[in-house]
Image (cartoon, rainbow, N blue to C red):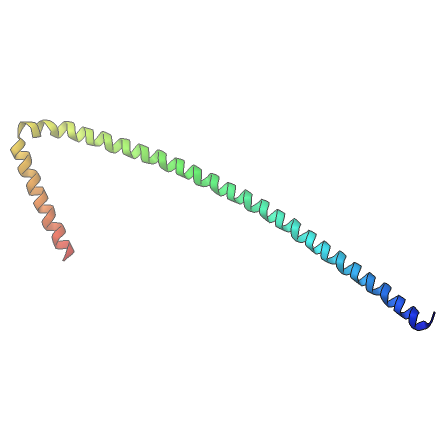
Length: 115
């Protein structure tokens, strides 16, 4: 074997070693990327679940406040109806006249606001 043949064999060994080292480095980098991607996905799922939980809690609280407000409005309307009902039954024309005057006054006020 000549020195040239030995050099070729040596270069071949170095080339295979470099290929192996490169392959190992790429695999290590891919493993790190996979691990970081899994970790990011897990953190994202956890954050999403936490945000969804907060949103659901806020929706339930808003529903509760809305139900309370509707109950208060209903009670107030019933109270006013009980107080005004007899007066309307006793004087229907007077009530109709007052409603017409109130409607006319509101029409004039809102009609001027548009101009």
